[in-house]
Structure formats: C-alpha cells, structure tokens
Amino acid sequence: MAASFVHSIGCPLLPGLAYIIINQSWAFTIPILDIVYRPWRLFLVICGLPGFISALALLKFPESPKFDLNQGNVKRATETIQWMHRFNSGNAESPLQIQLILGEAEVQPSRDHFKGAKAVLELIWNQTAPLFKRPCLHKTILMCFLQFGTYITAHGMFMFFPGLLDQLVKAQEAGIDRITLCDIVYAHNPLEASNQPTCTQSLSLATYGYSITLDIIYVLGFLVIGLLVNAVGRLAILVFVFTGCGACGVLAVLVDIPLLSMWLYILMMMSGFTVSVVSAVTVDLFPTSLRAMAVGISLMCGRIGGVFGTNLAGLLLDSQCELTFGITCSILLLCSVLSFFIPNINKKVQPDSS
Image (tube, rainbow, N blue to C red; front, side, top):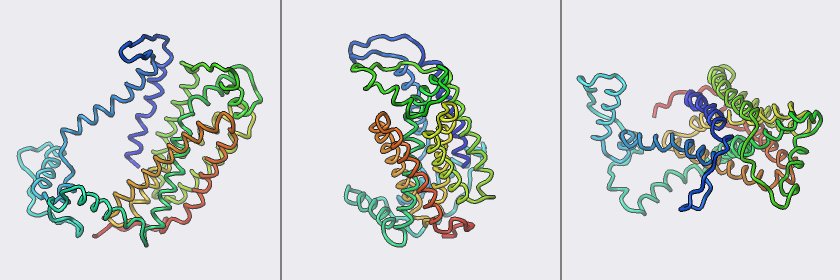
C-alpha cells in the first residue's frame, strides 16, 4: 500500500506537464524520419525519460541477494547484504558480520544446474505449473480474473478518459444542460461528422483540471486504504470499490446532466485502487516458493485486461457507447461478487515460518 501511495504522488505531474506542453501550437518537420514533430510527441518523450533514467540507475545496483542465493552464489549474496547495510546505515567502517545464510528448501545448489535453454525452460515450468494444478488452480484463476477486470477499466477505459472528459467539458461550456454521455460521444463521432476526420491537437483547460483531480483522488484514496485496510479488512475494500465503480459507470451513461456524468465517470476510474489490494491478497494465498510467480502472472493477466479494454473501447465506443460501458461495468460487478470466494479473505495472516 505504501508503494502504491508513493507511486500515486507522481501521477498529478502528468496532466500538469500535459497542460504546459500539449496545447502549444508549434510544429516542425523532421525530413529524415518523414514526420511532423508536434507538442504531443515531446510530451511522450518527457514521459519516457523517468523510466530510461531509472533503467540506467539500476545498472549501479547489485542483484537481489535472494536471486544470488537461488543461483548458489552465497558469496555474492553476502556481499550484497553487507552493501545494503552500509548504504542504509551510512557506516562504512564496521561491516555487517554474516556467518551463514540459511536458504529455503527450494534453493538450488548451483548455477551450473540452470545452464542452457532447456534448463531455463524447465525452471520456468517448475515455477509456473504448480499454480495451475490443485490446490492452487482455483486461486490462480480467481486472482487473475480480478486483476483482469480491474485493468479493463482502470487502464483500458482510461485510455479514452481525456477525450471523453474533453467532450463533456465542451458540452457543459456550450450551455448544454441535458444530454447523456453517449449522446455526446455520438455527436462527436468523426466518422459520421466528416469523410475526412481531423485530429484534435489540444484539450480544453478544464480537462486538465479534472485529470489532476482524478490523480489527487488516487493519492488520497491510497492513503485512506492504507490506513483502513487492517481495520475494515480487504474484502470490504474490494467489494466497496468494485461495486461502487461499477455502479458509477452504469449511472454515468444513464444520467443526462453532463457535469454529473463527468464526476461519475471519474469515480468509475477509481477501480485501480483494487490492484494493490488484490496483489497483497495474492501474496497471502500462495506459499513462499510460488508467491512471486503468482503475483507476476496475475499482473500479466491484468495487463492483458488493459489491452483488451483499450481495444474494446476503441472498437465499440463511437458506435456502441452504452454496450462498452455495460461490458466493463458488468465485469467490475462480477469481480465484486467473486471477491467473496477468495479463500480466507477475512482471516488474519500469520507470519510465514518456512
């Protein structure tokens, strides 16, 4: 939860940067690439810089000591732990004394065992196959579907959030008091409006304000969830978020007040709160040897859900707006029901002694 809160703090920076960059009107041609370089291209480059800088910074850090231990390199694992101790304590004169590192039962004895492509594939299979066998199969499917359903809305529908929000803002500014969200979408359908659609290069200023508001809600929401998760339990949070976001999505296409539709649409985007909660539940459901792979596979399914949601909205939104929202909201409500089937969701987790 703490990591999600820290991540959400940086989110309001994106609409702020977009406000500064995207609405500028300059453009120039790069002949060698045969493209017209516009502000939105610069925005994408700036958004990619933190990841690129982080990748370079990671080159200066040692490998995880657990990974080294799993590869049988106890010496390097010991050196890494001592480096971490010096880094955290700031004391380089008295190194941490380590006499012995006790590995888990599944720690492999030697790196030589994993040389070759066949051995690597065998290792991947041995770590993945147990998740799709009893007694882990139903838990794996459940966690994967919950992440899939979350990402469909939180990432898939979010791809079209600025555009839809801009249309709602412009309808409100035009003095249109009674119109549904989907009617606005149909009215702005470029394929119906013209045989030669134009690309909108700028957004209304209010759109950036609402985008920043969404990110601020995420910051506060992760903070509140982090404070309440132990008090109310994970099940209550999952059911509340899934049900609330699904209901808001349904209401967003039913009400005919643009301002209300706008806020309901923003609240529907809050389904992303459940990603970290489901990941935490996944860690508790599986044994130590399978936890990392279980979380990785569930998040992979979530990313697939994001791709599915983006393509679904891109395919249907302009022609079947109500159906698009109906599918995504139904999946959110189904996730709310499935949350009750998570094993031991209300049970206090005991520290793993293995």
